[in-house]
Amino acid sequence: MSKNLSELSARQGLKNNLFENLAKTDVNKKNIAKEFLIGSASVTGTMSFYDFLKDENKNKKVYVCNGSACLCAGTQGKLTTQLTKYYDEDEIGHMTCLGRCHENSAFHINGNNYSALSNKQIDDVINNNPLNLGNDHYQSDSIGIKVLTNTTLTAQLIIQAFQKITSQDKLQTLNEIKNSLLRGRGGAGFPIGFKLESAMNTESEQKYIICNADEGDPGAYSDRYLLEQQPYSVLFGIMVSAYIVGAQYGVLYIRAEYPESITIIDESIKSLNPLMENIDFDFQFKIISAQGAYICGEETALINSIEGQRPEVRTRPPFPTQQGLFNKPTVVNNVETLASIYPIVTKGGNFYAAMGTDKSKGTKLVSLDSFFNKPGIYEVTMGTPLINVFEKLGGGFKSAIKAVHIGGPLGGIVPVEKFKELSIDFESFAQQGFLLGHASVVCIPESFRMIDYLQHLFTFAAYESCGKCFPCRLGTKRGEELFTNTIKLGKKIDRELLDDLLDTLEQGSLCAHGGGIPLPIKNALEYFADELKEFIV
Ligand SMILES: Cc1cc2nc3c(=O)[nH]c(=O)nc-3n(C[C@H](O)[C@H](O)[C@H](O)COP(=O)(O)O)c2cc1C
Ligand code: SF4
Image (cartoon, rainbow, N blue to C red; front, side, top):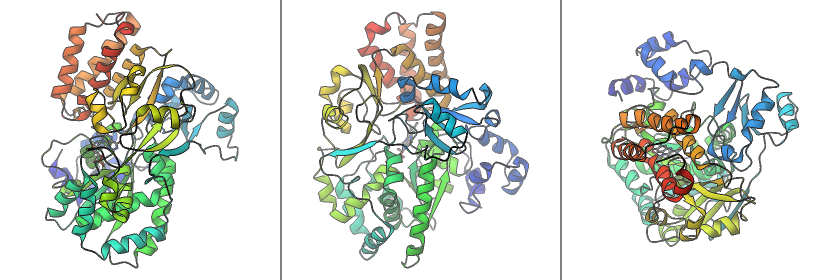
């Protein structure tokens, strides 16, 4: 990370944002470098990082989802074949993932997402048939008290609730949030109260709240649900956080793979803005549309991204709450964490803390993929047995599966025999050697070879590595090679070498990307040893 580049980018800040300038289709790299007083190498370095900005993807006309859920469902080969009726092979790109894990066959064209449920549908989309072909459908239900999925808030309702907040001491609101013991839902489970307090106590004229809406874990679409179905809960959480911290901006960094989310949040902000004029609160929302890079979900890479720098992970300390966006105090929180603030501040921190287990409070959204009879987004009280989520809410499986991958690519691979031992909370997963993460569930069918799934994970990890630290930059690539060579060339993987590689990644990586990828591999080595022994000696 360059402190100097942060300051140069800060000169124009969010108003004439460097990243947004780089994302324009008619970008003139030389002019931008001149305007922002940065080297053209910095401009190229940034642009070449992103799937949607890099030169080699300029001619892509349609993007096929290559996320884990679509892969396991086996829908994308047929989809690609159908698309080649209309496009040359080099015009077909990939996106990971479009958040349509509940129905698969997902693709993106002209800024919209679709699920090709039939060949005719693809033809209709491409021939501009004026049907609502982009609409998708999934279930939503709950076990326990609903706090994120019960009502849909309106602009008026959240302004009323916010006026009540501003009429009381901000420490009172902070205490309610601290008392709720709410932990971040983006993966790491860090208490939000500490971050808000730290940023509040850091002296600065400028501060930022960032809503991390980069939900990059294939299999996860719960943030998408909140952004599209409960947009005002998310916006309220940002406003309350900003009020506590003293931030003037609430930035929503939303992945471009979720075009509907961007539109709905934009419309919601437009409805809210006139009402905000009537309250004494110096604050603005800003949407930043991401450009296709998984690592931008990591909070410091995300900050670099907004600054228009190459989105590499930053070393910590300093932590973002002290030195974040444009080197100013910044609180980054996940969409679901922020949406949980409304029930906390309206019903009280104790109400929220009364739900869940000792250390995991409140409720959690779970995303179930298309292998379930009722795929969808489900809200459950923390501590709910996993098997109840799968059977009572998901309605069981459509066909035989051997494992589920929970918590994204860096989450654990849970074999069927472990389902009964787990409940939806951070501790249960950690104690059993898995990771709750964002609670996305991707089913791995009986017929899907584990070796192919592990290769897919390493390929993903290598492609998405930011390259900042060498254990991950080189290690994920070596892992990909080991698995590809055994699949394609029959070259056996040396177990000692693999263990060494996994230890290096785990211990030497700067962030949880390289540090996290060994977990699912180790789970598979433990629970699918018999199946894998043909490849690993
Ligand atoms: C490789 C990687 C990807 C991540 N992707 C996301 C993401 O898509 N969304 C998210 O909220 N957090 C993601 N995180 C976690 C963030 O770094 C950060 O912990 C989170 O946004 C903090 O918010 P929370 O405390 O509300 O969870 C990712 C972390 C890593 C290491
Ligand atoms: S672990 Fe990987 S993604 Fe994280 S900083 Fe290192 S190279 Fe970047």
